[in-house]
Length: 394
Ligand code: LMR
Image 1 (cartoon, protein in one colour):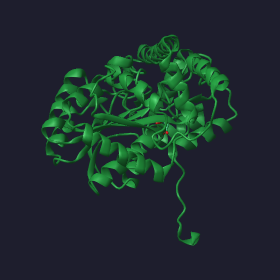
Image 2 (cartoon, protein in one colour):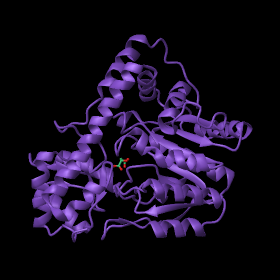
Image 3 (spheres, protein in one colour):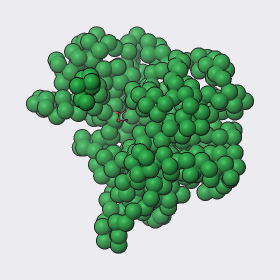
Image 4 (tube, protein in one colour):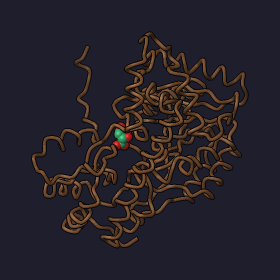
């Protein structure tokens, strides 16, 4: 049986975790996989989450199954964080808990494939390297358009609008809700308005990947596009991740939300989500979602969580400003948002930075700003100068 299998390349991004760990240099800097690091250089368990975990440990009476829908109180409390008012889209919006945002993407992809086998999904490039494999594995046909030009560090808004205008009704368009991964380059509110209107007019299905809410400008500002698109759309999907904004990474905490035409359609969609979840993971893991539920159910822990999240967001933006101040050719970093930006450098330069300077980043030139300390901004800029890795001023 197994002789028919061919060797698979390791995941380029996740390989960096092991390479960095095994590098003995004390001066090494990890700008690879997207995890937040605090000023002490660690990925902390948030205080609000710790408090919720204590409550969970003391108070949990059973570990009985929850079912494929997961923790529905978690889903209900998360919806207003993402969508605004508690009754936003009342009756038309359903959600299930998923193993992380990736589980939500996969489930959403399979839901689309079940409704419309082989449906086309439009991805703006560059995008998170796992988007295409997950969506193709779910049975979708991927089409691409140019979203961003690394050389000039600009959004290709005309290409985006042209692609959406040319897409066929019933096609799906994947949109990054905020903190674009890998470029940090966002649609502004007027551009979101235009995209929301065009997507609705053309009868496209928006599928929003909302994985970094609160790490760009703040919880509400980062949800502007998602809320705008859902207000305009008849139907939509949102893959939500709590891995970054609750610091729950390995707990794999997320949700898939679906907006349907009416309550009856929503109930059918919900049933299909359960069936698909059942054949994938049967039921999602509980712990992370239970911690988020306890945080969001408590005004006091919610306030603490929001305060901690705001501090994380501020730190990322401080790192952006420090780099822009240290080197004019990195000025674009201060205009971008979220954990990531993508430097216009070659994989060879990325390898040289790793080998000669102990600086780790994705082969695409993507850097995780949340991995850098302000005090190391000068070292990083110096290394970029040494390898001729700085772009023209833009
Ligand atoms: C990232 O983009 O670094 C994160 O989303 C981690 C991952 O799974 O790729």
